[in-house]
Amino acid sequence: MRLSSKGWNNVLIFGVLLIIFIFNFSHKLRLSSDIQQRTVIRNDLTIVEIKTPDFNITRTGRTWKSEPDLGLSTQQLASLVENWQSLLLETRSAIKTDRHPYPISVYTSKQEQPSSVLLFQHGDDYLLQIDSSTSLFLSAQQLPLLLGR
Image 1 (tube, rainbow, N blue to C red):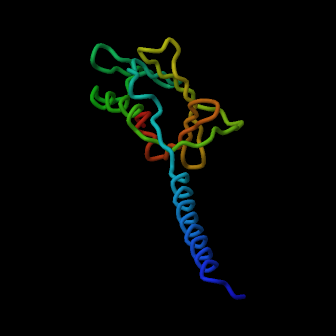
Image 2 (spheres, rainbow, N blue to C red):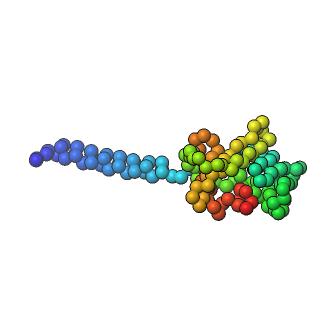
Image 3 (cartoon, rainbow, N blue to C red):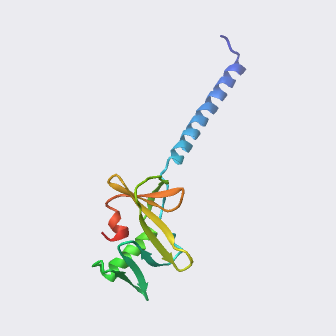
């Protein structure tokens, strides 16, 4: 196959364009596979109470109180509540399971209805289902950061 100078120029131009396209496309694939993370409760909300079947953590003035007493200091309770808005967790799609969830209600000052979170055990770790389409991965080591135990 014999090509003229113009023919070889066209082959080189299309070859370079193809290489640029491949590098650009592979870069976008790597970006889209990045892990999405978010907190359980948005930062712009002020938490006033966290209710679980086993205990309640309530804001009283500027301090926190647990009932029944969890054996945590007010500073530890404040840190635990802060983790609900600062701990970044990996997002996953919601799960459908027959297991019984551990329901958690988080009351904030700007919302009339509490934010309902369902805690499911997922192997040795946990999933926090925050709505019908999204859940957050919670490792067994991170569980005490949100529930204090």
